[in-house]
Amino acid sequence: MTFQVSGLPVSSYQELFDLDDVALAKIQAERRIATAFPGAPCRISLEDAQVGEELILVNHAHLPETSPYQSRHAIYVRKGVDQADLKVDEIPDFFKHRDISVRAFDANHIMVDACVVPKNGDVKSVVDAFFENEKVDYIHFHFAAPGCFAAKAIRN
Image (cartoon, rainbow, N blue to C red):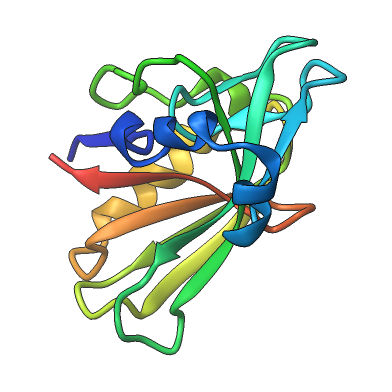
């Protein structure tokens, strides 16, 4: 079973960089500058921002479907980046620096399995094992310590 990890679409977030700080505050978003590497993981490019790079911290509904697991959380997006274009079965490099919560969901958006992979752990093996279960429709990755959404994987 193969899978594809994807970043969020550029089109959903790049217009935020045209807003001033007052307009961002009205939508509960903030302009930030990356102060450490790694430290500000972009959910569009699936890469960490470089020190000095402009970001927007914004709330994202990563599981908006009707479900007890419906959820949203703060994410970073970087200015002027392309959407990640990972190969089939490729895990983003920015996972290596962090503990990753891997959460498997069925087609009804109910969690059927989950685990935490420590930094530098084998996330791909967990994804492969979860997708062996025919009930698993997709997987969400979260940065375990802050709990925020990182990326999504779907079956190919």
